Length: 132
Image (cartoon, rainbow, N blue to C red; front, side, top):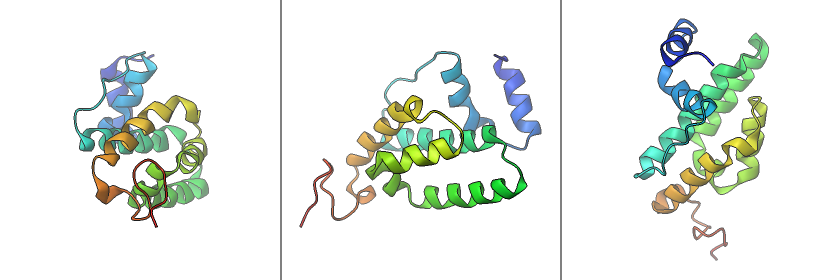
């Protein structure tokens, strides 16, 4: 496992954002961040992890365009990912990562999103139950 300065340099050379990879690097070293204090913190961690996975996946040019388009769509539709673990799992596996390792991060973001009703579908009550 490279040191953070080395990882930072490699990510920068690859034209990635070190912020997107920092959480993945910490996880690989066994560090698990504490539960985020804010809704924005949890959402930012999930977004950064998805972008970091995209950078780490390094697909070929054709797949890269497809992956970039899908990730951009998923970023716009983050509420859908937070409502449904299967959607999140599918995206994470599409990026080449074992989804279950990212489930706690998804759960933190989902839990944080429940504190802000604007992130939930108008047909869901926050516990997964449909509201008529």
